[in-house]
Image 1 (cartoon, helix red, strand yellow):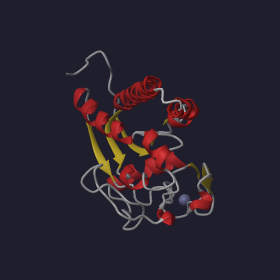
Image 2 (tube, protein in one colour; image 1 turned 60 degrees about the vertical axis):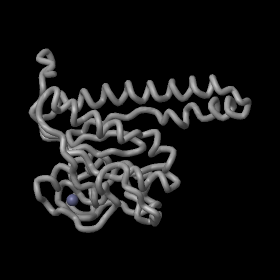
Image 3 (cartoon, rainbow, N blue to C red; image 1 turned 180 degrees about the vertical axis):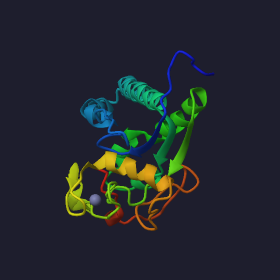
Length: 217
Ligand SMILES: [Zn+2]
């Protein structure tokens, strides 16, 4: 049902899903919250050790509610700002088999993926999958693959200079590339693992050096 009281923007937005910042948009807006799993880890571990099942359930419900509420607010805001939302197809099913598992679960990309399309239908515009590959290492200003790579560069939030001198916030740069790849510019052939048939895709092996640089433990 369309909510006529809410204006809908006319932006084309690329959307990068990450771990440090859960959602970054190509128009410089980043949606970030605390890692709830990490915040509640001590209390949860104590309750589990004491076999307090009701306390454990209550903590899990609290985390789920905060996560859901936060995601609803973020996806509604994104939907109101854009008419086209291109969302990166990074695979959480693969990353949960790595040291990034906890952050990947907590980021709850699946909820974002479910909410954006139905909110697009409810308000206006469309939400489509975009190509995530190489979005983090490609300079969104000139297209050069000049960004920081590998695990040693995981903490780098901003970079730029070697190709064209433009400085980038890592996740916003990735979001811009996801949008640019959608329009046909320099679609890369190699990079990080992407969704194949949805979030249920199963992978049996995953080399650590293939981790996208946009992700953090
Ligand atoms: Zn450049």
